[in-house]
Length: 85
Image (cartoon, rainbow, N blue to C red; front, side, top):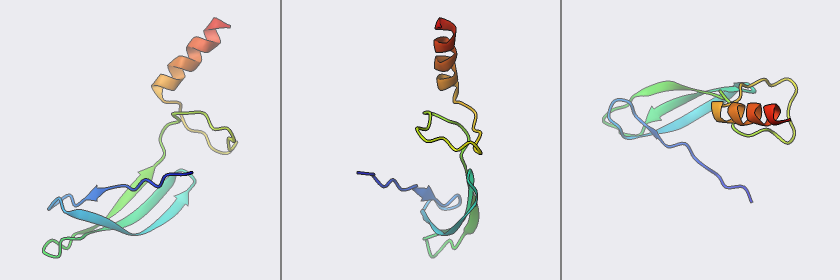
């Protein structure tokens, strides 16, 4: 069973809860969202950018069009395994 994890955002001005109003996947690795503060006395709105930046665990069904750098820990483990052979 897949567990849903939510991203908890805070307003950069008043530190109140900030909610994603809408988001758009622009590439397989990049998403932009409009965020708004839920404090009516603040009223801030802004744009959030989310980007996939590293591979932490190899995919069991990799997409050949996606190229993400390996996280340093994974890269070091991979290099150690390759040098042992």
